[in-house]
Image (cartoon, rainbow, N blue to C red; front, side, top):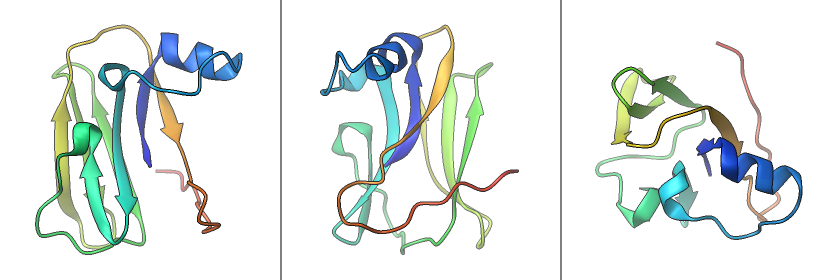
Length: 104
């Protein structure tokens, strides 16, 4: 799972005072059981597994987009309403698979 979180959630995670997210403060894309889904459980249609997923945050238009880097195509976008600082969020899960981060 990857995406962005608001400052309040980030600070709670850093201080280990929170293990459960309020979904309104987390925007993410999750890959589980061979399928992608967005925050809130909305499925991503017509999408095969990607080896590299890109994330683009457009704060001026309140939009977070996920894309397949190798195929150069949009997977899905989310619109958000909260303001303030947003921070990257990565949750590799418990399946033991490797998660890497690439620079732009």
